Length: 251
Image: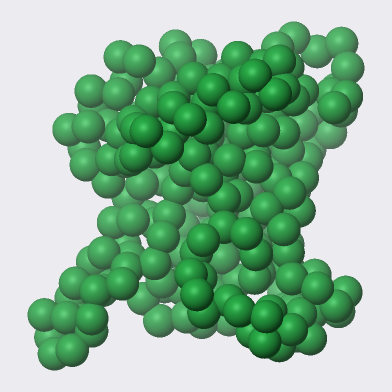
């Protein structure tokens, strides 16, 4: 895969949630372009397997770092193993809390779980490495969801919180030449996010809600992330880029 910015120096890229799904596809795009990539997530075995495969297949240097990004102690410990300079930080870690929402305790478990898994995983790491982001060219790209824009209970509310946070982050880091943007995907198959619910009938139904007649692929989202991380996107910051095939029109 050719680099969209041929001639530029190799960059150091950190991708959270990089062991599977969208995060893995994002990591593969950067590795294929020759960048040095660190994938971060909770499951060490999955991460190591992904790092070995991506590195071997793409000729890139890919390393794995196991860390529960919602745990401040683990984030603090991970700082010793993260690069001293980060050119691109991609916040792709996140999931839906599956705890039953019966009664106040169940509701609390669902809302707290979605906040921790989707908001804290991005905020704790980003705030901890903001001094390592490369000046005059650093990029922060955070992956959220269509649910943040059209509603989606506790999960959508958590993703929407990232939109508000990103506005503040863009304002704070802009004077340093660092851009901060959001990619908000619609339905993406092949990630494991929906589990057995995303059968053929559901895929057909969801594809019918788009303008292009299909659901997304992890590579679609990865392409959007890579664009926002490129020098060509240096004058774009504080934005939310929808990546949903027209399932929800821009607003």
